[in-house]
Amino acid sequence: MRPIRPFVPLAAGFALLLSGCTMIPAWHRPAPAVATAWPTGNEATDRTDLPDWRRFYRDPVMRHLVELALANNRDLRIAQHQVEAASAQFDIENAALFPTLNGGAMANVQKEYARIWSLSQTSGPFYMRQYAVGFGVSAYEVDLWGRIRSASQAAFDRYMADALNRENMQLSLIAAVASGMLTWVADNQAVLVTQQVLDSRQHTYDLVLQAARTGTVTALDVAQAESALHDAETSLQIYTRQRAQALDQLTLLVGTPLDDATTRTLQTLTSLDAVTAFPNVPAGLPSDMIARRPDILSAEDVLRAANDDIGAARAEFFPKIQITAANGTASNNITRLFQSGMGAWNVAPQITVPLFDAGRLTAQLRVAKARKKEEIARYEKTIQTAFREVADALAGRETYLKQRHAQDALIASNDRQYRLALARFHAGYDPYLSTLVAQRDLYTARLGGITTQLQSMTNSVTLYKALGGGWDSAIPPRAVASIGGHIL
Image (cartoon, rainbow, N blue to C red; front, side, top):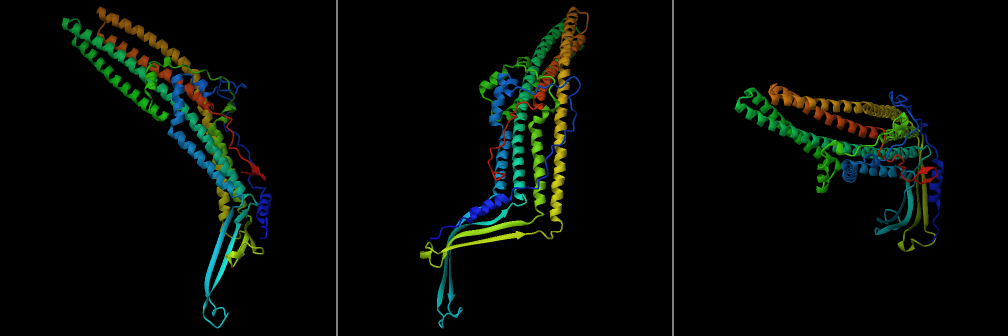
């Protein structure tokens, strides 16, 4: 048997050497369309460190809920499967850089009549047989102008963008779970405060009703006390419903029903003060720190992919070279198929030159360039949105602390006013209306204090997320090998 000629490997190696260039435009990262510094009062320093999310979310219940969400949240699973699909798509595009080697066997038996071929005077049939075994390359495109390489690079950049989107989803999920837990605790605290107010108003109503029987208060006082009682009952149901809905939302984020131990531990948090405080985010972080956010890096990778698409569109204007080749053995007798001298091979190169396409290729290039401009605008908007989120959170950090101090002072003054009004009512100096007004002001102030504290703590979560904290900014790209300058 004649040795098989190594023309297929040689053709593949020659093709790789030819396909070393691309027509991808030079990459330049667009300049951020934002200010170079944070708003006044947040001067930049060289500090670029943020604590890991496990050190930022120090409350043990909150950390447990976040860990459950990272393991069970369905949106995060969807994002992970999208990354896997993008990885597979890159493999598909990259495989086109190399020849596809196929093996095959063929048998062909054909019945003919001797008279048709003037082989004899008889009209009897005879049989034509052909057998072949071998391997070959079918329609392999030599990537001389980098069209396939550009498409492969674009697929890789989109894979990286999807991987970063998954990390951004994780960052957002962690913040959402933390905010969801804080909302539940705030609603739980509001329920307990409203229950206290309801108990107080029930006690006051009983006293007013008893005093009415002795004639020391009027029927108007009784009606006002009864109205206040029903108002508290209504508020209690409202906050009870909000607390249940907050737990439903938290369960959805976690992605699995909370076990009894977690639920019992959560119910012990009767005040936002019971939640472990967040560490302070370092002041004076540099404004370019947001460039490490996964959503910004993802938008940049999408922009890179659009830039790669221009290279692929440019390469379409140049000739395409395709190679079809086969090597093996052939015989008209299967018993002699593998005997010496039965070798057979063929090579069929083909070149295609675009001559007239009614402007299709030019339109494809215009589309690719327009897509790049679109992605530039989207990239710039992503940075602007990130800058606004950080600026808003920094402004919140400056004001929420002062607001909480003012709210605490308001609660203290309303508490004194209520106690004085209640004492004057019991002494008979003032009607019950003054006590009712003071009590309502105190209740409103206490609810306002819960809301302010919730907003302040949620703002800390937002600032940490907006600065890009809570994910591994050193995520390496998928491990790739390189042969002849090509990504594998």
